[in-house]
Amino acid sequence: MATSFALVVLEEPPRDLGRIVPLREGAQVFGRTEGADIRLVSDTVSRRHARITVEEGRVTIEDVASTSGTFVNDALVRGSQELSPGARIRIGRIVFELARADEADARSLAIVGRGHEDGAPSGNG
Image 1 (cartoon, rainbow, N blue to C red):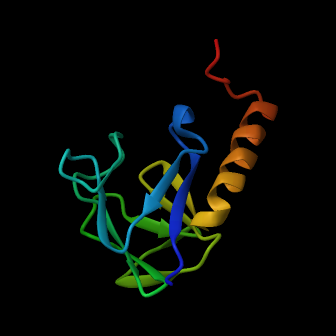
Image 2: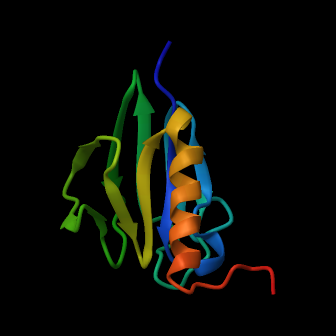
């Protein structure tokens, strides 16, 4: 059985910190348009920004001619780049971390807890 993956929101927007975005097998496009597979509502994200592909237990990402570029671990993505769990992906101002699906919940809780310790709003108020 192939390994399942998810993305966990690390930064921006604050209301989405710790949000888990499950990744399905095949290609998915990030963008701010309603037709994007993974819709990111931010003026720093292009209509069609990047494509992430999950295939046979491997995850790759490529920029699809975005205005601001796609970054992995702070390096600009050129062509298709393979990702490993723990990789940090920046699309506009939004930062994700790639996690194995079975580890995403624990990672999300750690991020949300860290945000509260840093004085970030809890959303309860």
